[in-house]
Image (cartoon, rainbow, N blue to C red):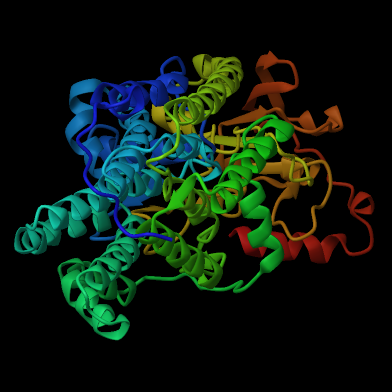
Length: 542
């Protein structure tokens, strides 16, 4: 491990120029250009919340189903941007614009950090670029992803100001920067704090201070990032805040998150990408032609420690540790740099290989998103038959197996809320973590996430109903329409009292006919524990 690289005066190589960084930012956005709705699992659900946020005054019937209250919470990134952008662009275009910038900002942040630490962008830094489309982004954690993109760029600015000797200026401007990133999402602020401390610790060591003294001096310099901690304390001790923290040190799951860093559609390609990047890092540690930045390697070790200590669920919000895995991988990669004595041909070859891998990932993601986009269009054709303001129950088919290529349909029901101001039963019920609360008591048991997910059988460790149970037991007086989105196979007799008005494949839209009798649920099909199972799952989803 070595310290900071000297500032270099030799001519820039093609991968070290500003135009190259700009092109990489544009390339990173390519997969999101065509889809009307970015095919990210949770994103449609968030768009439904944005619609309620923006349309309560114009669609008063929404207040019969949802309560929306602005709160000062560390999860407001795109919610706040919609206040400014939605009146200008419309909701869907505004969301697309913001989401499209996230991979671009992430790419810029990674390359900027590498430049600040190494003096110039090393050829090896290009291997970190594929993480701009990582599993947490595909999952649709958009406020989180935006906050992390901003945190990377903020950390690069933190390093730059220290390098230029503007430490007092840094202390002043990072008070509002830290506050804004916390407002976007708490995770980005926390990550910025970890990176800033680790980087400042090494800077203090390079200034000649001992390890302990450098630790305390680094903590002092990071005080400008502390104010959001007060807001977080107020947020998490306020009235109505729920959510538990659990599932610590689940090593099997943590290993799965690492293997799934690039999880999208083709498992072999996603795991091969991970293997290639790990090989690059391990080879870099042993190759005498490659150096390792002590600054960034220490940052990577700090992120690894946080990853190991984080539980899977924090304050009721799942996948807390999974979200950090891609960035834990990126920092060891941008820590590498070719030694000054390495041949120009060898360095250019490294850059070309890194660029080729990034372009290959972008190409695959573009194809994958195009396929998801076509499936979205096919399913959303049902909404053309749905009247504005309908009370809609949506049932989305799922399997009990955690298949690598997720359908990304789980929160498509919220597009009925987004486009038709209809009731959507996929909104989250998480007091203190969301500003929207579902209040539609007539639909109790079928009014919030995950009541929209149905399977062909009972799934272990999941609160998903079999499709037969949902079709037979949903409260028919509470809903006007039923939308089946790629449901599992079911007995068509369960459609009794439902009038089909649209079909495409196995998907269908029905109008509820209350003049007839609902189908009878055959309890014998559920086995001896059926009645108890029904009571438990209904209680859990109420």
